[in-house]
Image (cartoon, rainbow, N blue to C red):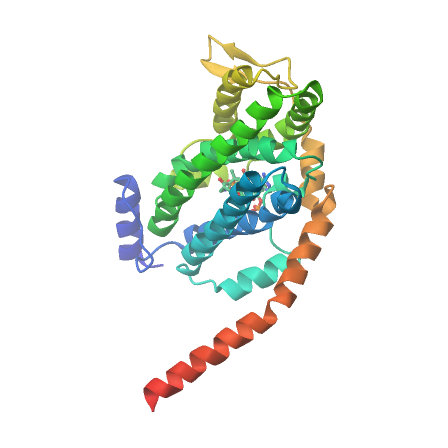
Length: 311
Ligand code: FAQ
């Protein structure tokens, strides 16, 4: 073991300062970061699919332009995150191969179907809302490239959340059928969005070490409770309800509480047996194969430029 390296690393963490790519770091720290950042990158890329499903059916030109911009933003987030993960020594090609081989994780939430236009609103409001709640603390993650990527990502996610809220607000104030469509979408996305924060604390094997390394700043349950508190206020402005009658603020613990979640369903989704897992991966694989000529052309162009400069 590199004792001087370990001591320097420990000092940086104790001072709540930042580790940069060329600094010495424990192998387990490197591994956990590659795990979390690559999963996060895959989520952004796979997460393009549920909403992209509605681009061709957006109800107006304006809605279509906004949705296309949002989906492109997610692609950008994926690229920042793959770049951050690459600084730890894992090539992007390896991460992509793991994803399309079905060996990598991505967020459970993107394995649910988008059944109506209102789902685009519910995703923006709930899914991007949960993403912000989870990712604002990650802006202070001890690994520099990850924290810096999160700052840009969070700014865009805030805009995404507002656009989702605004879609739901318009539907909720529309015809009874539109209001019902909005309510059904919220009903379907609520519990899965709470599960985005990960398993309960007593079933979260990575949390304690990730918190000791200043990667995670709060536990899964702490962030989930905070999120419920935010949503329960915003849903009133929408004039809709959350499908959970057990939400309450506990004055003694100073925490929001919510009804039980179906963790068996969560495990099924993580095991690859959610409603859309196979469709999402299949589509990602197709896109990768369809893009082969772009990668070949880019490599040929780079080789020619390189040869020209050498000659
Ligand atoms: N889905 O010990 P923990 C977005 C896995 S937002 C799937 O608690 P950890 C924006 C976990 O990996 C979504 N797997 O783990 C957007 C671990 O398995 P492993 C992406 C999950 O890492 C919006 C095992 O369970 N956001 O994309 C999930 O300490 C709209 C045990 O769990 C991020 O990735 C889950 N929900 O805490 C894009 C945020 N939860 O790796 C497009 C960064 C847990 O040992 C459209 N990540 N697992 O095999 C994190 O903050 C953390 O990694 C957690 C999990 C909180 C997700």
